[in-house]
Amino acid sequence: MIDILTCAYLLLGIPLFCAIALILIKLFYKKRTSRLYFFSSLGANFLTVILSLILLVYTITYQGFSLEDNNLICAINNILIYFGIYFDNLSCIFILALTFLFFIVNLFSYRYLCQNRQGFGRFYIYLNLFQFFSTCFIVSSNLIQSSAFLFFTTLLQYLFANFYFQKPKAQSDSKKVFQINISADVVILAASVAFLCFSMMAQNSQDIPTLGFNNINSLGLYSFASISPVFFIIICLMFVLASLIKSSQFPFISRTFCAANAPNPFFTIFLSPVILAEGLYLLIRLYPILNLAPFTFEIIKIAGIITAFIASFIALKENSIKSLISSFALVQTSVSLCLFGFRLVDCAVYYYICQTSSLMLIAYSLNALSLYSGGQENIRFLGGLREKLLPVAIFYLIGSISLCGFLFSGLWARISFENYMFNQGNFAFLIFSFVLTLLCAFYTFRVYFRIFEGEYRGTYEVQKQSKLMTFSLVLLSLLCILIGYILKNYSGILITMSSQDLTKSSVPLINIIGFIAAMTGYILAYRVYFTKELSSVKNITLRKICANHFGAEAFIEFKYKTLPEFLGKVFNIFEKYVLEFLYLIPSLITRILSYILCANKTGKISSRIFGAIFTIVILAIIIVIFYFKMGVNG
Image (cartoon, rainbow, N blue to C red):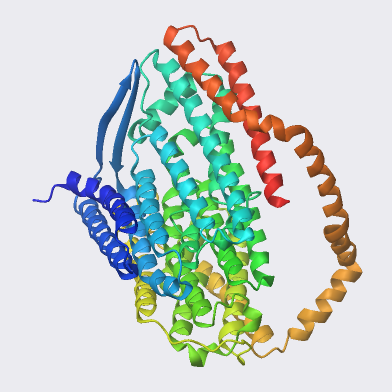
């Protein structure tokens, strides 16, 4: 009989052992080792896929299966530090998606690295370390441990964003990515420590609780009953803020676009369940706590709706492949967060997994296209590639059809959330979803017609297609086609975070309206970018209407002249008077946390003292986040 606990620890340990082995190979084996790096990493990742499938089978076989194991690492007085794992339905689904995605990245990246001829060892070492820390984050049994592993994933994101460190642009953008991510980590850590202290006060205990996710509901109720509602709401808002930063939601959208200098295979990971879903995953784990502060769900909904519209309109005009992929991903993540804001937890997970499979197929199709066309990232200089790269065009079409909700997994996802909105009477969001469906079909097929139809406008000769990359795209297309149907049939076993029924009968009229919205977007893209019957309207009439009735020319002058000058003066004043203070914040936070722990140990802490300290910490964090945000936008 298979020891499921051994499988769980092997799933964690294999990527770490592989990374250590690759480091030793890089240090002591001086011969050409590109294939050795590739096959070692691929073999290790294949084993993790098998182990994640075993855990998923256990989940299906034994309904309500959960596995928790905590190991004491060290004990300092009353502070007990544990390393724990917690496998349940949610973590098994995300782990399977994560390991499968890393397997695809291993297949996809070999040809890419062979063409660039640099960083073979570094890339695969970073990749395995990132898989290890991401897996540990997903299966962490307690909140403090999750916060710690989030920091390590932030560090690996910085290393990947700065992979081509010779480029000044990569250095600058990687620092911005690190600043935004580390600000979210600081907020999560501060909220976790505050929640920890309140939990101790609620239980009248000097022992430090682990804040385990299996007991997070009870801890939330204890804290909610024992402290001021204002402090509890502030803690929940801090968790929501950090999750929105991790998911690149408004006003932190620039985080995703700053990662564009990362290697193409890894850049797609930034837009996958590994990175953008960190915020959603953390919110789902903290759902019992947030449920005691209903106001936070309204913030999540508003941020998601604003981000979805902004990202959609960016995709309508963007020509860079990486920026287009970023926009596509942000729209789908925002819709998932909106569903979570309506407390449709199961539907949010189901929608995100289905649409992520479609998004990954589109992203890797475009990345393969860029590689075959000599690294061309601007779609204006492509075209007519359907004849030269027919398999890539087919894979992109499969992903687009699914993402827009015509067929495959995207159809199941669209039907699910539109009917939920209709059955709950959320007609405003239902209309919003129809508009997003229309926009999604328009900008998705806009990219198809600009790249694959017409005449080839590139200056590079199209290269021969790689079998490894084609095989990875075949695997992604099978996932895109099947995952929605599989999750739909096993939703009662796999997706059980709440009491929603994903198999509930749908309303035919709502399905027809959603299909008409998607078809309308496709027809508009076809008329504008293929037959070009509406191109004159797009380029002339709309501009005149905007200039005459909406002050477009004045807005452009304000955006590109007046606003930059004003912001430049504000930034200079801000850096001159505030920057020095910001350097002191890490040491101040350390001192404050040390004081809280010492006071708690001696039993001298009081609610007034803690309230004052907590307020100071919150103000300091807000200043830091404001600085990072302004710095990134600048």
